Length: 395
Ligand code: MG
Image (tube, rainbow, N blue to C red; front, top):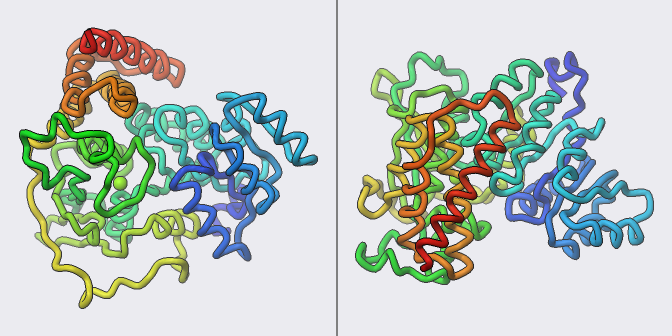
């Protein structure tokens, strides 16, 4: 514990992993295994992958777990006596509230992760934030809550972890621009005219990062980078028009900060989420871990290019939504989640993801929610609107 954490009475060594069976959750457990002398697993939250969760419980013996379905919870209670098992949408919230949860890794994908992440912030935990939707939907409310509780928010998104590192010891007044790098996703070398009809299989074949399905689709549309612009805006308090995107197919430079004097500071590492996860867990310490050293002499030549608006319409949509109002950012995220799921289910063409998001944004009234309940209401309304639009597109 740092002195500051001692003052707040928080023991950071007790870790709750929300989204334990997902890509970031599994990486987190690899990191925790490497550093088992420093951390203990207090809680694990999963959705429907109950077999995988059972393996994790057998290995880690957490105090509490949660799953989506009550029948799965009943099975786990029979298998693991002495482990508190919760189910339903409140389960992850209960884990975030666990008295021994000093560090909460928020890695539940999409808007489902919002309530538990917000609860961890309200309770002053260290929050290792992999769920970017939380900041897109409720960034202002999250930081207001963090100011009240003293919660620390440490980005686990690789770009934001990079920027956070570039800003260490720097004065925020000397920042000119944040530059988020982007791999360009699975379709970056596709002929533009073929993109609208790209198949699920083509889109899920990401060139550098192995991630969950939703974020891999978001990476191909670059909505992921759009959401990351909004995430960076909230995390680093930099205006949207000073956050830029640069295509960098090799994913070696994870992002950069340009300062007023023209100096550009970049963070480089092998593309492995073990680094952002570990950095969030051990900050401000840097310790050796799982990451393979980056051998620049053997690395492929690095290239950088502008991201074309014609190829990636979602990028402009995200910017536009975030500059319009908070309800537009919520609608952007909700409509995108509906559209991506519809694409994965074979109900929507890839090219219509942007069309559907656009039409929902056009019908959104500008507003700023006063609390989390209002955020969730706006989210629900936008989802319903997106479903209606989806049915019209399908006809
Ligand atoms: Mg990222």
